[in-house]
Length: 111
Image (cartoon, rainbow, N blue to C red; front, side, top):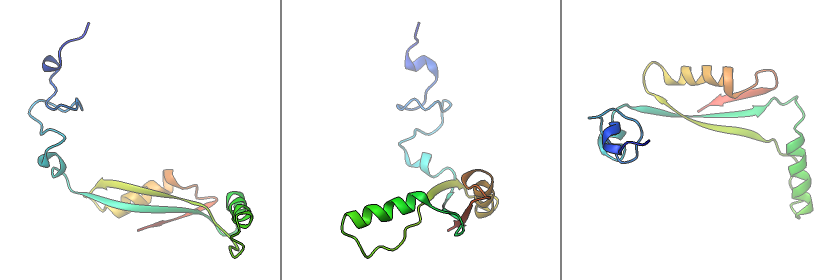
């Protein structure tokens, strides 16, 4: 048994679940409600940790004729959008330390 969209209380056409009277997702008001900070977190294996994926990439480079490639270190890049409230860089650093990086084998840099 399904009810029509008009009886579900959706206020926008994308049915995002926002309450009635809330600005629709496609409007300028939706995008300007809260300022956000976009912070990049780069996670890399520590230098003393062997990087088998990087070694495999070097081998593939040589097979493809890129014989000048000496080493490759593979990592991860996260682009975090966080509310621009209480020190977003510190909150993102905490997030990286607790979730995005394994502190035993990885280092991270916030930019």
